[in-house]
Image 1 (cartoon, protein in one colour):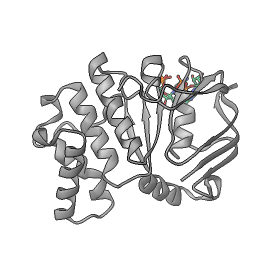
Image 2 (cartoon, helix red, strand yellow; image 1 turned 90 degrees about the vertical axis):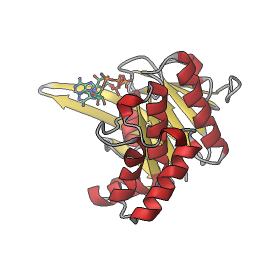
Image 3 (cartoon, helix red, strand yellow; image 1 turned 45 degrees about the horizontal axis):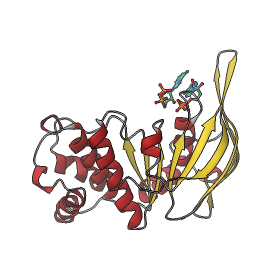
Image 4 (cartoon, protein in one colour; image 1 turned 120 degrees about the horizontal axis):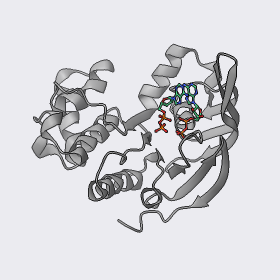
Length: 231
Ligand code: ADP
Ligand code: ADP
Protein backbone atom coordinates (compact mmCIF):
# COMPACT_ATOMS: atom_id res chain seq x y z
CA UNK A 1 0.00 0.00 0.00
CA UNK A 2 1.90 3.05 -1.19
CA UNK A 3 0.93 6.65 -1.64
CA UNK A 4 2.38 8.70 -4.50
CA UNK A 5 1.44 12.37 -4.82
CA UNK A 6 2.84 14.29 -7.72
CA UNK A 7 2.51 18.07 -8.09
CA UNK A 8 -0.82 18.15 -6.26
CA UNK A 9 -2.58 21.51 -6.31
CA UNK A 10 -5.82 22.44 -4.62
CA UNK A 11 -7.56 25.75 -5.14
CA UNK A 12 -10.68 26.98 -3.45
CA UNK A 13 -12.63 29.54 -5.44
CA UNK A 14 -14.83 31.88 -3.41
CA UNK A 15 -16.46 34.55 -5.52
CA UNK A 16 -13.63 36.35 -7.24
CA UNK A 17 -10.99 35.16 -4.77
CA UNK A 18 -8.94 31.99 -5.29
CA UNK A 19 -7.10 30.41 -2.37
CA UNK A 20 -4.20 28.10 -3.26
CA UNK A 21 -4.47 25.69 -0.31
CA UNK A 22 -1.92 23.32 -1.90
CA UNK A 23 0.55 24.81 -4.35
CA UNK A 24 2.27 21.71 -5.79
CA UNK A 25 2.90 18.86 -3.35
CA UNK A 26 5.01 15.86 -4.36
CA UNK A 27 5.25 13.12 -1.77
CA UNK A 28 5.69 9.36 -1.42
CA UNK A 29 4.61 7.45 1.66
CA UNK A 30 5.47 3.77 1.79
CA UNK A 31 3.61 0.89 3.42
CA UNK A 32 4.11 0.76 7.15
CA UNK A 33 5.37 4.33 7.60
CA UNK A 34 4.40 6.47 10.59
CA UNK A 35 4.27 10.04 9.31
CA UNK A 36 3.29 13.30 10.97
CA UNK A 37 2.27 16.34 8.95
CA UNK A 38 3.02 19.59 10.77
CA UNK A 39 2.52 23.25 9.98
CA UNK A 40 0.87 26.43 11.17
CA UNK A 41 -2.87 27.03 10.93
CA UNK A 42 -3.91 27.65 7.33
CA UNK A 43 -0.80 25.98 5.84
CA UNK A 44 -2.84 23.30 4.04
CA UNK A 45 -2.55 20.31 6.42
CA UNK A 46 -6.27 19.47 6.48
CA UNK A 47 -6.55 19.95 2.74
CA UNK A 48 -3.63 17.57 2.23
CA UNK A 49 -5.16 15.07 4.66
CA UNK A 50 -8.54 15.26 2.93
CA UNK A 51 -6.90 14.53 -0.42
CA UNK A 52 -4.75 11.70 0.99
CA UNK A 53 -7.89 10.25 2.58
CA UNK A 54 -9.88 10.45 -0.69
CA UNK A 55 -12.40 12.72 1.04
CA UNK A 56 -11.65 15.43 -1.50
CA UNK A 57 -10.06 15.59 -4.95
CA UNK A 58 -7.15 17.77 -6.03
CA UNK A 59 -7.59 20.54 -8.60
CA UNK A 60 -4.62 19.10 -10.52
CA UNK A 61 -1.79 16.64 -10.14
CA UNK A 62 -1.63 12.89 -9.73
CA UNK A 63 -2.47 10.77 -6.71
CA UNK A 64 -1.68 7.07 -7.01
CA UNK A 65 -2.99 5.04 -4.08
CA UNK A 66 -1.98 1.41 -4.03
CA UNK A 67 -1.18 1.52 -7.76
CA UNK A 68 -4.45 3.18 -8.73
CA UNK A 69 -4.82 6.74 -10.06
CA UNK A 70 -7.46 8.30 -7.82
CA UNK A 71 -8.55 10.80 -10.52
CA UNK A 72 -9.64 7.87 -12.71
CA UNK A 73 -12.11 6.60 -10.09
CA UNK A 74 -15.69 7.81 -10.05
CA UNK A 75 -17.16 8.98 -6.74
CA UNK A 76 -18.67 5.56 -5.90
CA UNK A 77 -15.43 3.68 -6.56
CA UNK A 78 -13.52 6.30 -4.60
CA UNK A 79 -15.85 5.77 -1.62
CA UNK A 80 -15.35 1.99 -1.85
CA UNK A 81 -11.57 2.41 -1.95
CA UNK A 82 -11.71 4.77 1.02
CA UNK A 83 -13.91 2.49 3.13
CA UNK A 84 -11.76 -0.56 2.45
CA UNK A 85 -8.32 0.91 2.83
CA UNK A 86 -8.48 3.85 5.21
CA UNK A 87 -9.59 4.34 8.80
CA UNK A 88 -10.18 7.90 10.05
CA UNK A 89 -9.72 9.44 13.48
CA UNK A 90 -10.80 13.02 14.16
CA UNK A 91 -10.05 15.71 16.73
CA UNK A 92 -13.66 15.74 17.97
CA UNK A 93 -14.00 11.92 18.08
CA UNK A 94 -17.21 12.09 15.97
CA UNK A 95 -19.00 9.45 18.05
CA UNK A 96 -22.78 9.17 17.97
CA UNK A 97 -23.94 10.24 21.45
CA UNK A 98 -26.92 7.84 21.76
CA UNK A 99 -24.92 4.73 20.84
CA UNK A 100 -22.70 2.82 23.27
CA UNK A 101 -18.97 2.49 22.66
CA UNK A 102 -19.51 -0.93 21.14
CA UNK A 103 -22.40 0.22 18.93
CA UNK A 104 -20.28 3.12 17.66
CA UNK A 105 -17.50 0.69 16.78
CA UNK A 106 -19.97 -1.62 15.01
CA UNK A 107 -21.28 1.13 12.76
CA UNK A 108 -18.72 0.91 9.90
CA UNK A 109 -19.40 -2.84 9.75
CA UNK A 110 -23.14 -2.20 9.47
CA UNK A 111 -22.41 -0.11 6.37
CA UNK A 112 -20.06 -2.82 5.08
CA UNK A 113 -22.78 -5.47 5.45
CA UNK A 114 -21.01 -7.60 8.07
CA UNK A 115 -23.33 -10.06 9.84
CA UNK A 116 -24.48 -9.22 13.35
CA UNK A 117 -22.58 -11.91 15.29
CA UNK A 118 -19.32 -11.10 13.52
CA UNK A 119 -19.89 -7.38 14.08
CA UNK A 120 -20.24 -7.93 17.77
CA UNK A 121 -17.13 -10.08 17.97
CA UNK A 122 -14.95 -7.75 15.91
CA UNK A 123 -16.12 -4.66 17.81
CA UNK A 124 -15.29 -6.32 21.13
CA UNK A 125 -11.88 -7.31 19.77
CA UNK A 126 -11.10 -3.81 18.53
CA UNK A 127 -12.12 -2.31 21.88
CA UNK A 128 -9.87 -4.79 23.63
CA UNK A 129 -6.99 -3.77 21.38
CA UNK A 130 -7.32 -0.16 22.57
CA UNK A 131 -7.73 -1.25 26.21
CA UNK A 132 -11.41 -0.35 26.52
CA UNK A 133 -13.20 -3.70 26.69
CA UNK A 134 -14.37 -2.87 30.23
CA UNK A 135 -16.22 0.24 28.97
CA UNK A 136 -17.95 -1.33 25.97
CA UNK A 137 -21.49 -0.61 27.06
CA UNK A 138 -20.96 2.98 28.16
CA UNK A 139 -22.25 5.99 26.25
CA UNK A 140 -19.69 8.52 24.97
CA UNK A 141 -20.66 11.07 27.66
CA UNK A 142 -19.82 8.50 30.33
CA UNK A 143 -16.25 8.26 29.02
CA UNK A 144 -13.24 10.57 29.37
CA UNK A 145 -11.80 12.32 26.31
CA UNK A 146 -8.98 9.81 26.05
CA UNK A 147 -11.45 6.93 26.30
CA UNK A 148 -13.65 8.48 23.61
CA UNK A 149 -10.68 8.74 21.31
CA UNK A 150 -9.90 5.07 21.98
CA UNK A 151 -13.43 4.21 20.87
CA UNK A 152 -12.86 6.27 17.72
CA UNK A 153 -9.61 4.40 17.04
CA UNK A 154 -11.37 1.06 17.55
CA UNK A 155 -14.03 2.21 15.09
CA UNK A 156 -11.30 3.14 12.58
CA UNK A 157 -9.84 -0.36 12.91
CA UNK A 158 -12.82 -2.65 12.50
CA UNK A 159 -12.80 -2.89 8.71
CA UNK A 160 -9.08 -3.73 8.90
CA UNK A 161 -7.71 -0.73 6.95
CA UNK A 162 -4.03 -0.66 5.99
CA UNK A 163 -3.85 3.11 6.50
CA UNK A 164 -5.01 5.10 9.53
CA UNK A 165 -5.37 8.85 9.10
CA UNK A 166 -5.80 11.10 12.10
CA UNK A 167 -6.39 14.87 11.99
CA UNK A 168 -5.25 16.44 15.30
CA UNK A 169 -6.24 13.30 17.25
CA UNK A 170 -4.86 14.70 20.51
CA UNK A 171 -6.13 18.27 20.00
CA UNK A 172 -8.90 17.93 22.60
CA UNK A 173 -7.00 15.78 25.09
CA UNK A 174 -4.86 16.53 28.14
CA UNK A 175 -1.14 15.82 27.77
CA UNK A 176 -1.19 12.40 29.42
CA UNK A 177 -4.17 11.11 27.44
CA UNK A 178 -2.59 12.50 24.28
CA UNK A 179 0.59 10.53 24.88
CA UNK A 180 -1.47 7.40 25.58
CA UNK A 181 -3.29 7.82 22.28
CA UNK A 182 0.04 8.25 20.48
CA UNK A 183 1.26 5.07 22.18
CA UNK A 184 -1.70 3.24 20.63
CA UNK A 185 -0.83 4.62 17.17
CA UNK A 186 2.76 3.46 17.77
CA UNK A 187 1.52 -0.06 18.57
CA UNK A 188 -0.72 -0.13 15.49
CA UNK A 189 2.25 0.96 13.39
CA UNK A 190 4.39 -1.78 14.92
CA UNK A 191 1.68 -4.22 13.80
CA UNK A 192 2.23 -3.03 10.22
CA UNK A 193 -0.33 -0.31 9.67
CA UNK A 194 0.56 2.91 7.89
CA UNK A 195 -0.19 5.89 10.14
CA UNK A 196 -0.53 9.45 8.88
CA UNK A 197 -1.41 12.17 11.34
CA UNK A 198 -1.80 15.92 11.27
CA UNK A 199 -0.67 17.82 14.32
CA UNK A 200 0.70 21.22 15.21
CA UNK A 201 2.29 19.91 18.43
CA UNK A 202 6.01 19.02 18.13
CA UNK A 203 5.78 16.62 21.11
CA UNK A 204 3.04 14.67 19.38
CA UNK A 205 4.88 14.67 16.03
CA UNK A 206 7.85 13.25 17.98
CA UNK A 207 6.09 9.89 18.09
CA UNK A 208 6.25 9.60 14.30
CA UNK A 209 9.17 8.15 12.37
CA UNK A 210 8.90 10.84 9.73
CA UNK A 211 7.84 14.48 10.02
CA UNK A 212 6.69 16.48 7.01
CA UNK A 213 6.48 20.24 7.47
CA UNK A 214 3.94 22.17 5.39
CA UNK A 215 3.85 25.93 4.90
CA UNK A 216 1.77 27.98 2.48
CA UNK A 217 0.60 24.85 0.69
CA UNK A 218 4.08 23.42 0.10
CA UNK A 219 6.29 20.85 1.79
CA UNK A 220 9.20 22.82 3.22
CA UNK A 221 10.91 20.07 5.21
CA UNK A 222 10.77 16.26 5.32
CA UNK A 223 12.84 14.76 8.12
CA UNK A 224 13.12 11.65 10.28
CA UNK A 225 11.11 11.82 13.52
CA UNK A 226 12.11 10.52 16.89
CA UNK A 227 9.95 7.47 16.18
CA UNK A 228 8.40 6.91 19.54
CA UNK A 229 11.32 7.59 21.83
CA UNK A 230 8.79 8.95 24.36
CA UNK A 231 6.90 5.66 24.52
P1 ADP B 1 -4.64 23.83 7.98
O1 ADP B 1 -5.27 22.49 8.13
O2 ADP B 1 -3.14 23.75 7.92
O3 ADP B 1 -5.11 24.82 8.99
P2 ADP B 1 -6.33 24.10 5.65
O4 ADP B 1 -6.00 22.99 4.73
O5 ADP B 1 -7.54 23.96 6.50
O6 ADP B 1 -5.04 24.41 6.55
O7 ADP B 1 -6.46 25.46 4.83
C1 ADP B 1 -5.50 25.89 3.88
C2 ADP B 1 -6.01 27.17 3.24
O8 ADP B 1 -7.14 26.87 2.43
C3 ADP B 1 -6.47 28.21 4.24
O9 ADP B 1 -6.19 29.48 3.69
C4 ADP B 1 -7.96 27.98 4.33
O10 ADP B 1 -8.65 29.12 4.72
C5 ADP B 1 -8.29 27.57 2.92
N1 ADP B 1 -9.42 26.64 2.85
C6 ADP B 1 -9.46 25.39 3.38
N2 ADP B 1 -10.63 24.80 3.11
C7 ADP B 1 -11.34 25.69 2.40
C8 ADP B 1 -12.64 25.66 1.81
N3 ADP B 1 -13.44 24.60 1.90
N4 ADP B 1 -13.04 26.75 1.13
C9 ADP B 1 -12.25 27.82 1.02
N5 ADP B 1 -11.01 27.92 1.54
C10 ADP B 1 -10.56 26.86 2.22
P1 ADP C 1 -7.96 23.22 11.01
O1 ADP C 1 -6.91 24.24 10.86
O2 ADP C 1 -7.94 22.52 12.32
O3 ADP C 1 -8.07 22.30 9.83
P2 ADP C 1 -9.89 25.09 10.09
O4 ADP C 1 -10.80 25.90 10.94
O5 ADP C 1 -8.79 25.71 9.32
O6 ADP C 1 -9.35 23.95 11.05
O7 ADP C 1 -10.75 24.26 9.03
C1 ADP C 1 -11.78 23.40 9.40
C2 ADP C 1 -12.47 22.95 8.11
O8 ADP C 1 -13.12 24.07 7.50
C3 ADP C 1 -11.44 22.43 7.10
O9 ADP C 1 -11.67 21.06 6.83
C4 ADP C 1 -11.61 23.26 5.87
O10 ADP C 1 -11.90 22.45 4.71
C5 ADP C 1 -12.76 24.19 6.13
N1 ADP C 1 -12.32 25.57 5.88
C6 ADP C 1 -11.18 26.16 6.32
N2 ADP C 1 -11.08 27.41 5.88
C7 ADP C 1 -12.21 27.65 5.18
C8 ADP C 1 -12.70 28.76 4.46
N3 ADP C 1 -12.02 29.91 4.36
N4 ADP C 1 -13.88 28.64 3.85
C9 ADP C 1 -14.57 27.52 3.93
N5 ADP C 1 -14.16 26.41 4.56
C10 ADP C 1 -12.99 26.47 5.18
